[in-house]
Length: 338
Image (cartoon, rainbow, N blue to C red; front, side, top):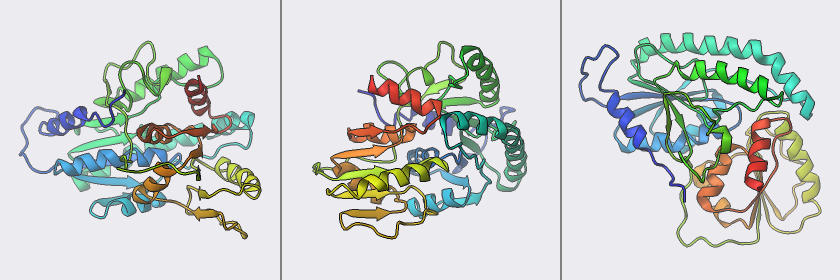
């Protein structure tokens, strides 16, 4: 059984904040730690929740950086931490499998521009905020030459869908970015069994790689019993999130059991006619989601990695629908189905 929240590296990293790059000992004050996740869906933000909770338990001072909807989610989850604005990547997916890759390739120049812009933002903001440490979830510009910097990712091996030669070339570029950080954290077990398969366990890993165990924002509810309800839990970037939502709504009108429908977006427009057997939610925080996810007889969701960590934490059954063209989710869907 894979152990959840094996966060010894986090504690070790906090202790490492005592030393600056030139080796001088700092005072043992409460450390100010920047937490900044990617904005491609909600998962990168939710899996930072246990990191933040752990830092707070160690009497550290986390500061969360993200766009408006990310900060709104964190403010609903934590009432006592500072949040600051950081522009997202705002990546949009194509409407079809083939359109996904083409759409993403067209956005590559803007993605590189965003990485450069967030690095410049960090250099300026670090001077102003006096950060003692940085934990970045898949944001590759958030490394600092004088501040201990962590990058967190479950995908070391790139799945491009363009063949092994393209994957190897992309992995070289990817590793160069990862090695700009002091450490690379993989939220998975180091050995077998594991959740990420070859995504997080390629033949060769960066020299700064640490496996920190699975991260879930959820805790097991004592005495919780399954019922026959269906939980639909949507997430991910547009337009695919809205497209799946529309398809599932067409099916729900012919389903008579109790359904909890979570859009995963505060910007979603609710359907005009919501049947009595459907309980509709735009977005739920950890406290609101936990009882629904614990009691549901079945979950329908994407095969995003953070969602999978939550499902495994609660030993929940699920029907996984990968985002079309998103090779990482398609791989995870096949890997877990097998």
